[in-house]
Image (tube, rainbow, N blue to C red; front, top):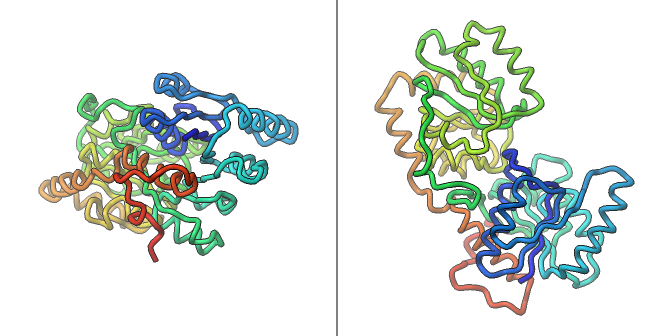
Length: 369
């Protein structure tokens, strides 16, 4: 097949949508398909080229003048590359690909990564809509996307082409016990609640340190909050790390306190690293943590409950080790290769002149009700 992926950019900034799209493009090309990505560019251009993936420059900035240019450039890309499948991962891409699709020129697939956005319903313009969790699929059905269009392909980035094997990383010399998160510095990621929870337990566990790995627009607000606590020297802002595995390997308790989270890709990486995990019981997170078997689920926006759980884990080494062990079980389903295979199965539904490979079983990811 000839497959074209549309993303706003391919920058190496920890954007989960970009990461998934890059993984798919590399593995699809490795599998023998002709693959291209259209975006405004970024650091992943070299990686894509090494896998034989072509890159088309396409600036999708949402200004009236630029959208006129983007429409023209998009048509040129389609005429030159002649894709069988266009796979849109972001909102501008689905609008371009959906509104400029001429009859059967290509089949259109979209992936809903952030269903909490109001505009996510526009992804329903595609012929097939991939949801990254059953929670996302159920939400989109309620919002009007026809169930017969939806397919669930759970996210997964383990053994990604973008990273070395977890065995090739060394843990950083963090202070222990180490509590950490890897997340964008956004209020919706629950950073404030995590800081508040740490402050509640810090006196009782004077050796504990909190590491906040990531960047974002709310970072200065969180830094100001930390400066007004008694523990600014024990709460560390580490900034964006392109390969946070070294942090995770040194982490005792990994926390994702998000208010909303379609899947929580970072949790799969924390599981692989063997962290004890505490995360919000929202959206796709329970699926990512095997419904609470691989990590402790807590209510979102509840720093008190989060503090209680952290204290329990820090007080009981056996319990802490149990949750570290549990996190590493049943990881096979989070491989980037499995995502690649199931995504191809969605494509094959639309491209009728190809036979579905036996390795892929579409009935396993049809939306279940």
